[in-house]
Image (cartoon, rainbow over all chains, first blue to last red; front, side, top):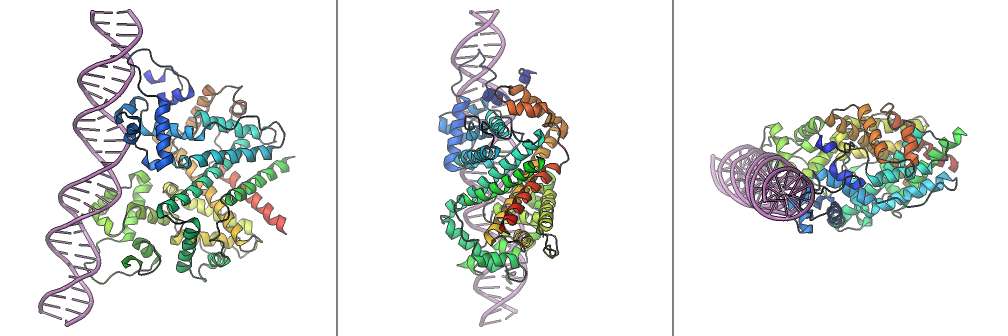
Length: 251
Length: 251
DNA sequence: TCCTTCTGCGTATGACATACGCGCTACTGC
DNA sequence: GCAGTAGCGCGTATGTCATACGCAGAAGGA
């Protein structure tokens, strides 16, 4: 009962993030803020990675004790969820669907999402435990859907397209970030580690059982990274081409 | 020096997985096998989730002590990598590129990959720390590339297409599995939890600031899950359409 | 004024990964 | 046969985590 006063069924910290729930008038004034806690945690994650975010580390950073954080957040999961939404940040402002070119608007949305996630690459490693219900996530969703407003897609299809593309963006960010993280740890450059990967594959595969891999290796394509954007551009264009084909087939 | 006898630079346990490295002739006979350890770990992950896989739990399952595992695996990461490859399993046999229809073959590859991953949904939560260099990963890669053999794509493009689709498959498996995991934990059915998510969104969004989300909610599309395959089919078709457009544009 | 509610936080518990080193085993070179 | 030695199982210890519990003090409401 006590926890469902507002009827959302949301944890208290999440309700606070939505701006519902005002401070109770009794008791001592809180010495911390959800926002300060989340900021500190985000800072740690950006500096030392998501793995470095522990309750005690966050508390130390704030000059408070570990357990005091639990007055603001009921479990670490909640903190992670809040961090995630902070990392997303609000989507870019403006109405993208003004001009009727859905593709340009939607591509811009994807690029903006990538930029936002790349600023805090650890977000893609936050384990997902609920469907997205945080303010910024929903705002990004609203924004993406509105790009598809003037298409002939059904509502369900719009959502499917949105999930397809946002999944792609997340995945792309995760992959490039993982590679960079490994490189940072080993101290190698991207070229070096790609080359050693290719060398390893060459050692371990033979031309009869792995003809296609061998061909790729011989073409040297596993060793040339291309610009960091290339993979993203390629994938996004393919997906948008596919969506465009669907839209065209409808009209 | 000592660890690089074979020159691959791979950890010992990984070399064992590739079938290089024979058992040293000295010393007592090992009481365990890498394969038995990995099997036990996979069993635990399949039953109780990846989070339940701890060194002590695996050891207990095998009737051995925790520390004995470190004679076979230098760190938990290695065990996870081996588990991952075991979960992938070998790709389906046969030559998919016999008939020249790349799309059918490649789609079959994607479906087979999804089936393989769905059998062990925790694989997608194994943190990635190196480019894939395990026997089964490489075999899947070989297999996917060979489906694209008769297309006019360049080697680099084939790899890009492969990563695009395998990333999509991984993501799709992750999402459906995450949702199922939440449902298992809360005990709700998919319909119930989707409905409560929709109700929550409705409470928290308003029609002026979130017109597109509101429209989707009103259409009721957030509440009808459709078959579990629907989302996968939709995304895969879009991507393949996009790839096909590229291939057609070339000829 | 007193009582309720909320605060910060010390302490304790139980996982967990893993370093270190000891006693033992079984093969190799003599 | 016999010593030397590499490889094995594992007990113990360390340090890190998340978090349950409960106390003491603060501040508003009656």
